[in-house]
Image (cartoon, rainbow, N blue to C red; front, side, top):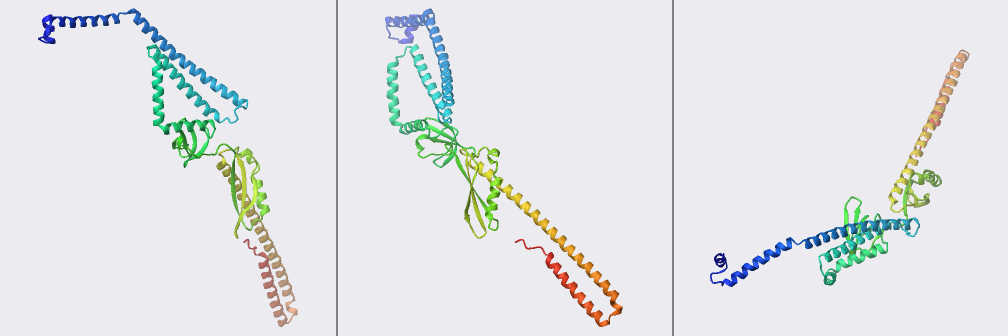
Length: 368
């Protein structure tokens, strides 16, 4: 044994040194064996593990309970009118929940580290210094966080609002402390750092105003047009819930030699202006189509009546001519040939004159 150890260490190694190395190896093996067979140590590990599991479960329960408290508190304030703008419910609620989750998990990690006998004082001091260094190095990140905080605090916009900022327009999906996500009208998602949001146009905070311009031919009467538009828009609030009040027919907005434009305005729900405009235009278009159909039917009826009158006059004239010719034939033997010829010429002239008059009366007036 001494010979083998001496060969492994060195040929010139003293016997005492080899014995010390062997003793150290035996002592290390004994320590490992004692550590593995230490019942008190394993009991402490077991209790520490149970405490860690208990701390984890307790943290999850606390987070769930705080979530419920936040939801019920915001709902109670909304129902009592203490929260004037209910659209802030989802935004503020989600922000509070995220904050609670971060704080609870951070405290849980510190408690778990204390179970492993870590010194929390130097650790917290190091984290503070590290956070300060990161803050100085990442000024844009700090700017994003501060801007996001004031966006939520001042209620500049909330989740579900339609906004326009920096050339992007869409529905707000998520408001975070660092970024804001906007869903565009075509399905695209815009992720905008809060620090770059300088100007915001919010389309969801107040009622919108729908404006519709109706072109009308200059020949049509203004009073008739205004009456037609008002009749067409009757009951639009029931047909379209986006319209808040009955539209206001302002009158002529502009005019040319061929047409004039009538402007119609209506107050609508926030961000529902386009839907209300489509409804107003549809109702007016249907009313104009019905008016044109009635005018076409009336014109066709007048034409048919004129044709019937002309035909009746023509038939009466033909009967009169037939009677005149029959009477002339009866008196023909008693008259001289010259008188007969003169009467025939006069009768022919009368017939031609009557036919021309009937033709003039039967012509349909020009509709242009």
